[in-house]
Length: 629
Image 1 (cartoon, one colour):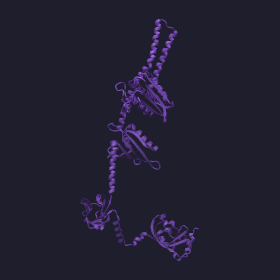
Image 2 (spheres, helix red, strand yellow; image 1 turned 90 degrees about the vertical axis):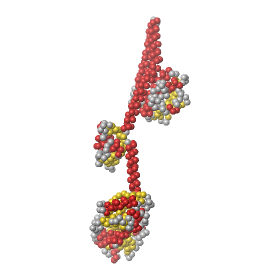
Image 3 (tube, helix red, strand yellow; image 1 turned 180 degrees about the horizontal axis):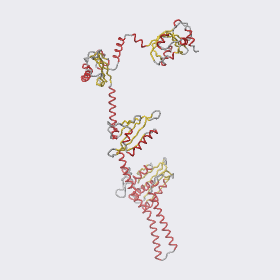
Image 4 (cartoon, rainbow, N blue to C red; image 1 turned 120 degrees about the vertical axis):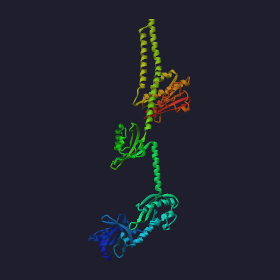
């Protein structure tokens, strides 16, 4: 049951020793703690006017004590405080918000009959008043001595003749002594290497001349282990009451690690700048609020701007761009901010002599809590050489494509010749028979119709052949859903007569007719190119039993087509070269060296598949893998 503080306080009025005292109360577990402070003592410290209500009801301790110090008054939990009398340092909160530190001297009141309550009288002292009663000169001396003994900084005093008059122990230790007083009366030339003492002396002369109000300089030194290092040395003049300089005060701090860190940072900065220069890659930051751009040295190099004379801004950056790119770059930058996505764009720079550079910019944005852009940081890389190389490759590819088309047209003409040879022979035979019947006057209407229909059928076949080849050369921009076996048969229709004329047996085995999205005419071109290569190898290296076997299978989510022949193996060192442009194993015969290159480009770049070749027993096998999705 909680004790009633107000009732207990009124009961304490009967205790004579508590007259003219204001009560502070605090509940601790099942006990009431009462602290009585002399009225004037309380008013002076807390700036509170005491009334009768406060005297009778009391003040809750937690309303005037710093929150972190309440636990100090849980005295029965403390091992260091006697329950009879004790002292505490604690903080109080004054009504004006000021915090001060008090020393409380507490004495327990033993003669009372309150159950479950402990009563203490308290004398409170502002700790600032304690120091006023001490010997200031003696305290200053003690404080100074403590500082000189325990500081890690090198503190010293000199008279106007450069002679040490006081020193910290730390400074004594780096000169080979233990205590500061041991080097009093000495000069730097006795304590430090000559080259160091020379530096110290010259700078001190400037102070003694009155030319400098202070000196601050990073200087070399040796520590107590003899290791070379650096100190930040500061010296100030000491003047008498008339303003005359009578000595100096110095303080030096070891900054060896700082110097090493700065040196390392400088080295890293130089290495970064070197790496950026090699990679033609610079870094930049854009402060949106101040519209200020900060470039690394390499960005200045890329933009060919003198970093000493230019004030950088976003507007200035836009002026450096190729005119046609300004709107594109600005819109891309603003869109990346709007969507809060990285900024990534390739654009051009234009120079006075009409030169153009290509650069690749990447950046990310930093946003405030309310979504406003604070700054953007990114990189810019000069990719002009890469662009020029890409353009050359593009020109090369265009030339190869043109050559490939010419070669394909030549092959197509040869195939057309094979396709047309038989129907033209039939037409020629029908015409000769008609002419012979006319000459012999044996022609009948039935015979004329027979020969006419024969000529008509062969003419339609020739027309269909032309349509097949014309469709093969049509460009296609969209994929179609077709089975691979259908495309293989389309290719067969074009090249079959050519294969048959060379007594080549071609066999197709398809384990799947699943349709997938492909460019069918481009794929047919690949099949024809591989079949033509197989035909040439079979004709050159095999006199009989010439064979091509095509298989189509569904393997691990891919449709894999294999075109294998028995026309001899490719030399191992050439197996990986056959897909390179202008490489051919046919030497001076009939090889252009671009058919397989174009086939690989079609499969791997247009259809995201794989085209490879491997030697098998007595021949070569080409494998085309296309994903089903």
